[in-house]
Image 1: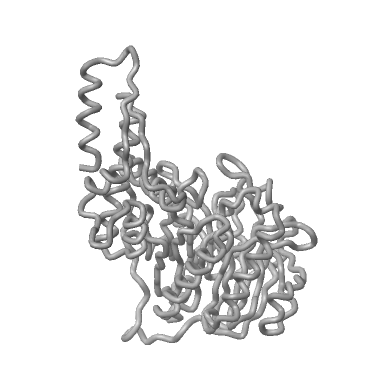
Image 2: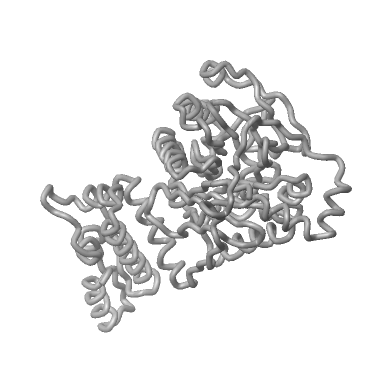
Length: 442
């Protein structure tokens, strides 16, 4: 067996919070290293945050992203572990949404996004251009802040993959998984065994089902290891990114992270057997025929490094498939907005919410979601999440000797209501409003 230990993650990044984002990236790499992983994948544009919007148009956003990447390269965190990190990069006067592969303090490859997300809630073409020369690599001259670290002046930039001594690794980014001609098809036909996807994918009802099914279908059709990383939380805008980092091998999910969580950093570890990828692909005649006839071949960057270790199957084994977990729609409605409310509250500096009650479905639904938020907060505190505890103590304005006792008590500190009746109100409505004001988060 050729066993490779891989890591992917959910990160709760904030738009333009370079120091905080850097700290969370560093922590995710540290956790991956401690677990023995040799490949770590992070979310899309994780250094600056996905939701920077028109701040992407400011050159400082790219400059500060390079400064953060430089801190990672000179820290020794990438020694012995390949890190796939997302950041904006300007090449030839054009801004691209990129993945930077790093190892031992050096950059191996910068891969720009080929297919942009530009519908629904996404406006990537407002800030980025797609890479329009598929299958081509150019020379990128690194900024001085990077070249001054270890003397590296240039790196390959474009549509290619990394060829290690024992396997090959490449990436596609978020939207590219959803496109009709996804990069993973061509990459697999070129023999790439591990494909990483750093995403900034937001929550909507049942979208996770589509996302996981696409990963399963992709790897069941062409084989391979698929590593999916995502942001998780509200990064300052209207969207909630719903995490669920995953590892999929030959159509089977072998690791699945949380979809709704108050954790800032969640790292998934899996051991994958690359020999099973070779066997899986070799069993399909049509795949072999298409791969053998494929021209032109994608360019590769040679890396003198091994990801795998030999195993006699007695001491080490690959991570086994797990049963995929899905929340039902009512759970998604209760949990997704609740997580968004908590992130917005703790990042805005506010100490609670004021909710005008009318007796209608809108205000009562908001009250119920705040109750769900308080339940999540108390649960996270009971599980030992120190960041949530710190935020709860500050927002709830607890004294030194006080602690959050229950979801209802916590809601009593955060949620302030007032009745805004109309001439159409009834006695029943007034009574229900008074009752519900006392029952939030029970």
